[in-house]
Length: 91
Figure 1 (cartoon, rainbow, N blue to C red):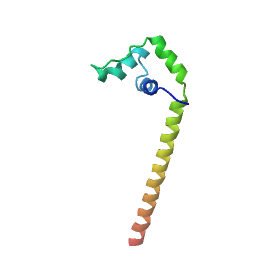
Figure 2 (cartoon, helix red, strand yellow):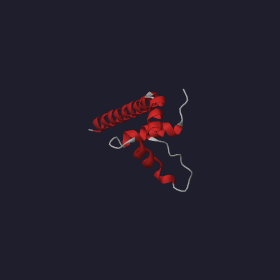
Figure 3 (cartoon, one colour):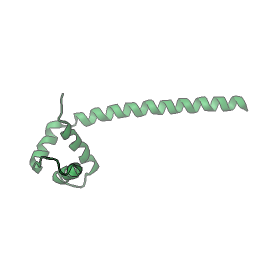
Figure 4 (cartoon, rainbow, N blue to C red):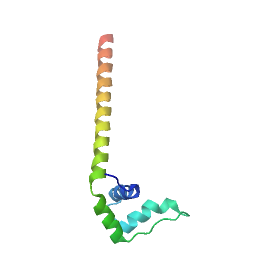
């Protein structure tokens, strides 16, 4: 499935600013683009975009990050265990 990248950024920005409406989230997301031509969609258009995209990209991102974090945690546990073994051998 192919998603419009701007729409995915909008979906993620909605998670960062849950207390504000769609238009304000869009304004925050595009605030650093002054001087560039930026679309100014209506709240309805943004709502429709969110519905079209759905939860699949966020779910996929979560799965990737969860896998990376799990692998990193395992590496840390393995490193800690190896350090404990080497410390015990010195005693």
